[in-house]
Image 1 (tube, rainbow, N blue to C red):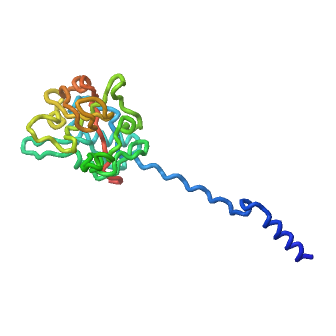
Image 2: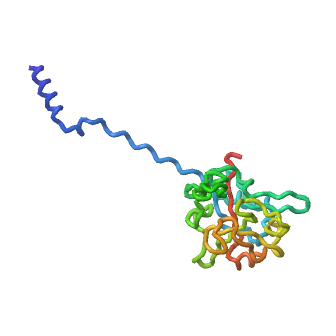
Image 3: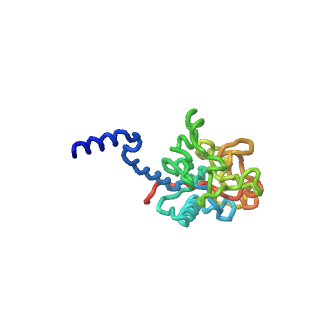
Length: 233
């Protein structure tokens, strides 16, 4: 009798739909944690025009803004070049920011490395960085006003050529190496890649002057880019 019951039970199981005999589905894998922020546009300017206190002052501003958002465990540098002056060598913005990759406050990748960031090769120029108004966010994850907004603040201080290097033509492109709020001029890029005479994120035109009023009058507010060099340092 027991043998008969076992045969009946086996037949009943075999008759069940295939899906009912399958093992329970494995639990879904947790989503990959977002990458920590390693790039942002400053949400505020020091407020003294292009006098940022030199590179040290600009770096300090980046570090303070990042620290306020809990990202102070990384070393932050301002994306700014220095022109050769008084026997001092030039400093290239691209050489100050580490090797990447860099991610904005929302976890979106901006560029994999310095070659991608600056479009060093044809392929890198075509596929490299993803900087636009939608991705060039502040440390708070907020967009920066650009063309079509009031006021337009898309001029971002860099003092750099498109390849991220300093000018070496004897002209002032850095407001006296970021210490002047009066005479001089600063090279700027457009974070929204909009407006003329070019669409570069880091080198479009010169500012009208170095005062806060002059930076504002040419479409900026004294903002600059900040990049994390590495963590835990």
